[in-house]
Length: 292
Image (spheres, rainbow, N blue to C red):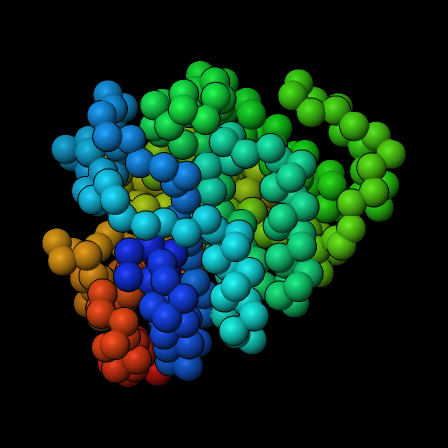
């Protein structure tokens, strides 16, 4: 089982000193990856329902700092040598996929091929409204965005003809380090999300708290892959463990064993403390229990 740290660009870690302490502690204690979250803003009043809490509300103070993912991960890349750098997850329809492809390829090339690009379609209509993007066509934008990025990464001279983006004769360098491009993990804990991951994802990023049991989600993912003639074992499964009431990780050895038996490849957990001055000892304690 691989372990990643989640929420690394928020709260106490959204400062140079706090982030440096967390990043270095994660690498030295043996974590495999870091994962950012993605919101350009928080909306004070909204009617949309957050899908990972029965209340339908995001349980986070509205003034919590969230550093933009690409600057944060680029900054982290310069301080590390082994940690993979993950987005968990970018709301892709918010973003121009041509620019996102360039940002991602640049980060991947400069980090030596360490980027894992988690992407989702989003759930907060009011956030889309504030950005100026149509919420109702986000699924179409999402899948076309993935195809757009792959065309730019994988073609020496890229061309693409889509509903929202069309181009030819495009030179965009540097390319990702891997000739096959950057691994794309499809985020979401709905049946639609896992079926999409089975069809077009290199991996799937699920999150605890949704309505569908994990076992069912994995079964549907594998079935969708097989329907497309893909090898379901080649689709990497990452699972985001929900924080406890104090914002830190709640996990037992039995939990880890159960996730392994279900086919999860990577568990992504919150930092084991929210105190930067204690993060070294907390990550070491976690590593002693789960990583070694």
